[in-house]
Image (cartoon, rainbow, N blue to C red; front, side, top):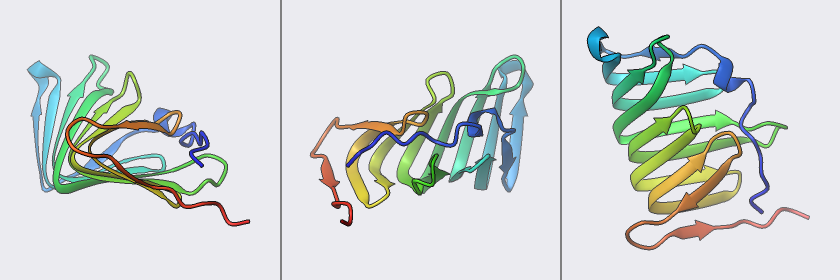
Length: 147
């Protein structure tokens, strides 16, 4: 049962903390590049990757993020004690305006007991809603709720 379980509502307004082995800041392009054991935290959200590029707005808030890894991984708690969302893919793109996370290549999304595997999954972080597809088959395992 894919009931709409929103991500923790205050996560999006929390500060973003990023750690990495190396960082390069390109002020002129409003871009920063993080390399090596990158960890991005915002509220209950955590993203891990080998290489993360962050495109900033003029006020320095992230507008778009690209994470690469083998694989990159993402997790976030859901509202109302619904558990957490786990995701992994070789490439993840996060669009802050849409609050959407796109998983590309060997994409896997796990929400509660349900799992989705596809070459491409778009995950709406605010509404905990996803769509999958692109090339190849989409595999979904739905586990019934315990009575």
